[in-house]
Length: 221
Image 1: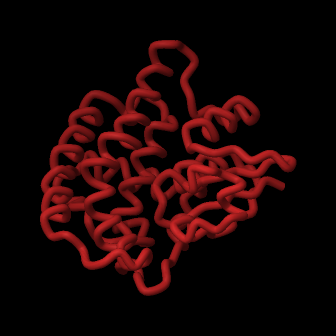
Image 2: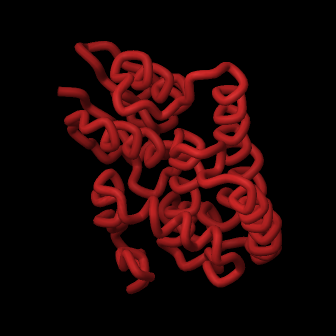
Image 3: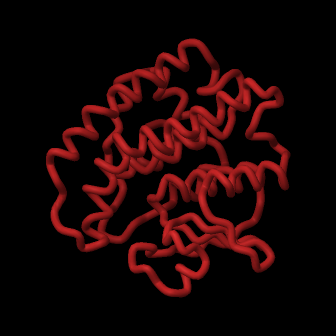
């Protein structure tokens, strides 16, 4: 069995969990308080970040590399399209959410509201929260534009791009920081993702001291 060292609200961990669950790959989850920099964990990943996947005694780090490995070893059901152009678009959007969205939104909202308290790094910076709350509007509008032209974010089939986006948005939804009324298209898209069996363990996540809102696990919002 595979072992995934993760943190429940880490969007990068969630992306890997969704990929594994969608492909029905059994995996033992081990919650890792990575900010405590435990020596054993640093031996698994010297970068000190989650997720880390253990496979036959070998440790893999970085969510992009892990998801590529999953796709190569477990190709069914596919989360990457068949043509080079379509695959490039998926990779572009995965990078959009894991880099741009994370920097502008997730790190400003989730880190300030949750991680700082858990890590005992002081009080939230209101200017960062305001910046994240403003920037998410742009990203939701961009998603709405994509979904006006496509069935899913990267095209006509669900891909890793959808899981990358859902991983970030679900983490923010846990702390009620997503305005689902801003776009009916985005809300419908998330409802489809949220209703998939792969999402069940994500919706069951609970972080001590931070109870989720009532709508978080409600498939009908």
